[in-house]
Image 1: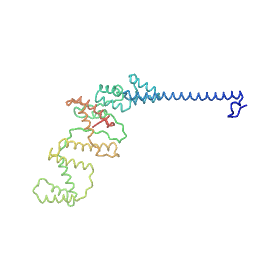
Image 2: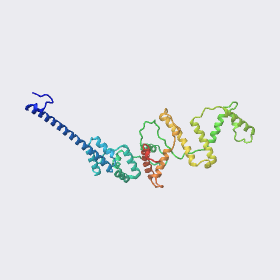
Image 3: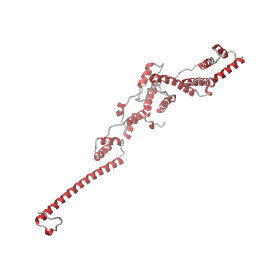
Length: 355
């Protein structure tokens, strides 16, 4: 018979005392097991904390390169902190190397290869953990250019275009621009101005083509009345409303005006290099507009984007890559191929180039 709760022990029978003792013993064992489980849990947490402390200490004390690559590999493999510490120790002992390179690593390694050669890349590979020469070569397509030693041939141009790396982009088709030095500017500026003035004056009332030719006759310099009539006709012409000129017409007028000023004043007006650059830029604009119309005529074409900055950047890279100012055609070809790789790497990584 069970006793009531809180019954004094002196009133309990021996059997009741034995039952209470067994119950107390069972509760004590239960609490001992709970305490043991807590001790095990605390022990496991302590081991994890010690492992994480060891990991932090290992990373802070060891001068490791590409720690992000090591951590990426071990996290992908779901390694414990203890295993991570063990991998770091193996890296320090140079018995373990984490693989898996990003595109930035390949670009930086290729840039060092072009600037410093294989020895420079080897030093960077050992010092800062860049990919080795053997690693980057399968991902590298060298630029192959053919030097044009005589008259330009179509197959040579096609081969050089094919040898350039193709940049995949969602931008509209823009094609290639080929600039060949040696163009000739003749003396058609005055003729074109004479023809333009003749055409405009013939549109005035009571001015036919024969009368305009008499007014513009350059052989009669002393005919004052004819000169007055010409000035009056030009004054009337200036009051006639003309449609706004297109950018192409403005370029044409600018070229003719620039040619006349440079022909009359030579380098007193501007330097020969500046004059050549301006004329070349405008000529390139005509070709660029025509090319864009053939490729994708629905897309806009902006004259402000017609520039020779990239050509100047390539020239600067060629001049500063080596100190050889008297290179032959073969050396120049090798430098141009190397510079093409350097420029293609620096274009998406402009923060690497100080300009």
